[in-house]
Length: 69
Image (cartoon, rainbow, N blue to C red):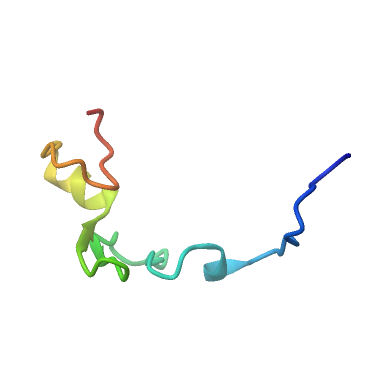
């Protein structure tokens, strides 16, 4: 067997379609987004931009933490 043995057909996506719908996409001339609401849990999720502005890791295991644990 060669190639993809899966029965799932790959599709090409472009633009915002390539990201999950709950991830906000900022425009090039806007401020970085600091948080978004996770539609599955309803919780506020901080982005890496927010953590970098804060300047340190809070140790809570945040989803987008840019700091080494």
